[in-house]
Image 1 (tube, rainbow, N blue to C red):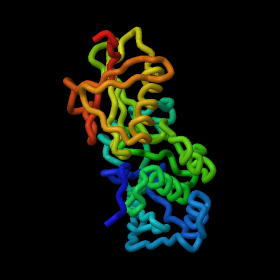
Image 2 (image 1 turned 180 degrees about the vertical axis):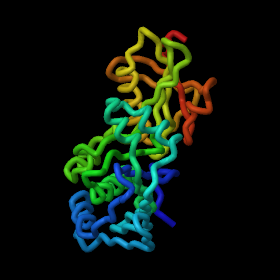
Image 3 (image 1 turned 30 degrees about the vertical axis):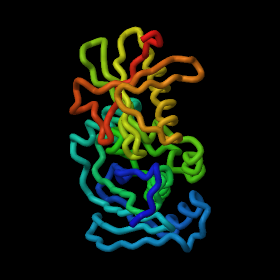
Image 4 (image 1 turned 90 degrees about the horizontal axis):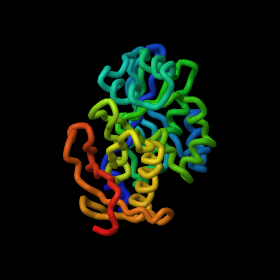
Length: 275
């Protein structure tokens, strides 16, 4: 049985790499060894690649490195349109970037299945592996758990990946998705918190609200719940130390089919301290 801690994720982190061509690249073991050694400060000998089956451009296999084990699968087919709609199309990138990702023709799936209980370290392993599959045809990295996607850019560089250990890259690992109720009002909800065994967060946003401030509030609340291992439920309150603002957690009462996350979703509202 894998070792467990208070922050052990219930769900397995996973990524999909998407390519402009249906000829997806096979990983090179030497590059994998270098990537994992750089990110985890280990010896190259601790990382091994096993390709169990290969048929043309399709393959399945496994990467092992210390406590990390990743299932890998290359497929010369695009992801289903529904997945693209829920990831690429709701991501915050420019239309040109999203259009390129939408036109992908091949994919590689990476799934964390090791014994390391830390979800941050599991995500680092996924990104270390993704860097070994990078080539000129790589269009993007899709995170179905978080309803988001991003271009490769410099995000797969070993130095950047190692920095994610000190500061979680919220723009990459979590989605902030809008669900409109009319032309001026919408629910803003996080996606992907469940990988860290934290409930997703939602807030109702209107014309007078600043969505950037709401996103920052989500980040601050996530850090508090995750790092302090705090369990909250509907009816609980929280005070923001920097501003003194009182917040109240409430239940999701509408659009539950899209707002509710795998580990639940809590609505954040401003609380009246006089009540």
